[in-house]
Image (cartoon, rainbow, N blue to C red; front, side, top):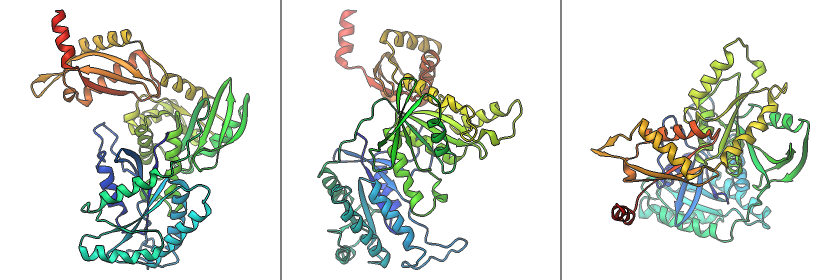
Length: 467
């Protein structure tokens, strides 16, 4: 079952990003130690009382007019429609909503507008009680400010919870209440589709819908629409050379500074759900714009979910070419996605159909690699050869010893290494071991998950007794 999604909603400058950073910081750092994976986070994993969920930071809606630093009034006609779209998307696509208001500035017309939208959406979804809404009053650092939070009862969304996202005051009570609300009633179970689930993701206007339509127009494809399982539109199921495939189309994701107010901001909710449901993700790039930082950001979201990837560079027909164009462009893609150097790169045109016939076969091959299992004996022969060729370096005067390895699961392939001290494993040596496994077994387009465990003292004693 996929993790619940909790969306932060509210007008600008109430502290949504500050709370997002605090919740994300309890579980993970914004900067990953893997080279090339540092990126602007819009989604992060959080955990409280045993519940793991994804927190989505909307980043707020910019209340300033283009070219002007002066903010619009809180009840401006330019401002209210934007938060209305934001709130409606949140209620439709999230599993829970944290509605943040500002205890310092007090109740505003914009807050009332959002509250009315949330109540109206809840009334329209009486048959499906998700999502619960938590009213959180931020910037309540003093007892006087916490006492003034009672004015937000006027919004009609239950008890306001005073917190200080900056200092962490009251966030524990807020999370306790959030876990309580999300635990009753339980989320409806997701329907598992048969076969391979393939999601098409990418920035807006890179040609995702065109690619979907072109794929469905291929010969030997039997297509039938099926209801989606994530409160989104319709997935598409097809049979392709005997393989049952479910295609999941998504809305485009833009870099935070370029996201249009409201609707596009929350397209990340649907894309995140699609990525989590998928087995293989088709990451679509625009050949006329080149690989961008946002392409790397989306690839990072996919990697965070440990999904397999095929990179498809669309609009290849619109690129002037010579003998070296494809090789040069592939190098640019590899450089931009240097933390995913194992993924296949296709150059296609959804408009003309050029090489689109390679997309599904490549995705199916990647899925086959994702489910591959390597016998323990073979793995350890490869490991011994890797250790002989490049012994582990010393760290703090102590050398890492790797005793043996076994594959403990597939989907994605997961390997457990027994070592003398897991703290001695440097990410560069872990990357070396991964490369040696890929040299022997491929694992095309599929991330490999490594776990290092200290061998138990009892096992060491038993080995000494045998000697």
